[in-house]
Length: 157
Image (cartoon, rainbow, N blue to C red):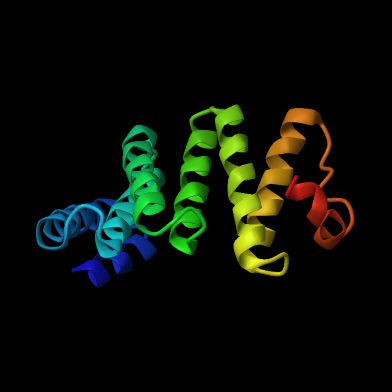
């Protein structure tokens, strides 16, 4: 069921994906528990569908739960936790909550740097997003100038 939901999501069939993802999430919560990594994945998938439907509040509710449980169950710097932080930051950005989004994305970038290193695609992508968002706030894109490697120390301060 989860694979079919993923296929629907990839095809942009959000309503079909949502129906299956809700079933998968409920089943996993019942069988595996609320904080099992597979349950958290199903919650994150449903939140992604909600984001794509423009249902920001529904997405946020799930993403906050996923992030909190991921931090508790997997640790602050686990790749799944970092992904949940990134997703929540994007949702807050789409909701117009720029300051909160930037703060969380900054935390995500710092954790990605510590855990994954400066050359990891997730660090580079999150850093570019943060630079763009901070540029919107300040009128400049300080992290986008030059290579990211020149700015590694700035990012983790």
